[in-house]
Length: 602
Image 1 (tube, rainbow, N blue to C red):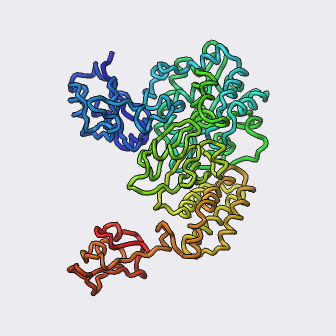
Image 2 (tube, helix red, strand yellow; image 1 turned 90 degrees about the vertical axis):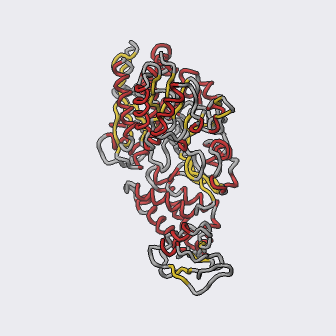
Image 3 (cartoon, rainbow, N blue to C red; image 1 turned 45 degrees about the vertical axis):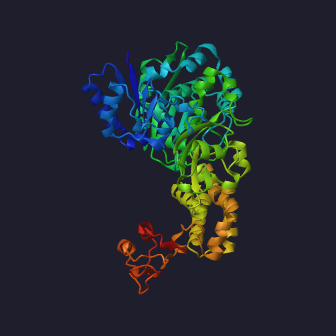
């Protein structure tokens, strides 16, 4: 029996910040102090508050140490684990309350969250099936196979109100029922873990922190729909997730939770991991299945839908990681438990990857209907550096932006659709006053153009024409007629593209045109970028009366575009500098080094 457990984040974010070295140092120091029989170190998945990583929590005290470094480890072991004294300088400040430690669930970041999909992330060792079982793991599968018929399982999922978390929001139970209704000698279950949106890492974190919940959920889906085989399609850029998935599948097989005659029920089911090469289009279900079959990942026309003719031309149920992650809790706790959260038409919780201009970057899981203001100002900790909130991009390249004027919008499927946005898979990129919305639209469209599979002309050619028009606008060569052409082309692409990637590619352009048309007009009429981002519309100048003549700007200029003038400002001793606009490459290095704020964008 251990008296202390030290949980260290082993997710991708903290791993990139050297958490493996912290774990090694912990184990080394613990052994050196003779504490190996008293203190256990556990490598977990993501805790969620990525901005403060690497994260370490010591139980039973619940001390939340943030931004831990390898050199901090000897002090933690000596002071806390050996002498029982908290290392206060490393404690997350919101958890410190006098001499006591405030529970994490009472902090600003966590108190409005309700974890279902992320319930075990940061809590268990994802590479130990026994820890998953200790937290009610595989109880839902046992209940299905020993107490419920396939029809009853599907009805529970229907009653819960769970909708697909991959972006479409289609009722999950209804999708399962379609596959179940089709008779075939072979059926499949597919988990879409291709997660390609810029800034999105929800699915990756579930796979890294709780892979067994996906194994359990897919097995339940197989039982409910009559499938005996499943595939988890995960991008190869997720090495930690892939490793832990394979470990989970191996452990489940060894314990008889995968394979033949599970729980002595006569039901057979097995899983395979299929690595994707990182093509964004493979997030579309038919392109994903085409890739699993060994072909180039391109979408297929629908109908027929996968429930009729999917993987290897057999009936197939496809859901994304987060959708599956909710299933064990729904079966175990009941449909009413899940349906009690959220809104009338959007039940349960939603996981968001919170990024961009926000203090608390990381993963959050909130009840549907939570407002954008609550997410940004309370959970997210607000916009850094005193800047103003401008917009939030939801759904990545397929989504739209929510402007500051709609910050009190409840986040659920229907409310976002009503304002011309979409939930998407859960990326939430926050922008402040320094972001140019035309440039943001161009960024996402550039991504879509690169990721188009090229199968259909509206997407292959249309998105490239859109990008050319945006390039023209941001370089100061656009006209008001171009804005009308831009909008017309967006709707053509939406209506005529073959798959969801092409159909949603114009969304960032349409949303920014709708809410920030004044910025587009400034680019084409005034030839100015209000946010000072688009380089072709920028000029840098020196306010000579503020210039002290120190010369730091000239030293930093890579184009030798800055030279001294004959003008000496009142109260200054040295002559001021000026910028030659014909030589300036607009890199901004001069503005960055000027301590006197004498260089400004014009």
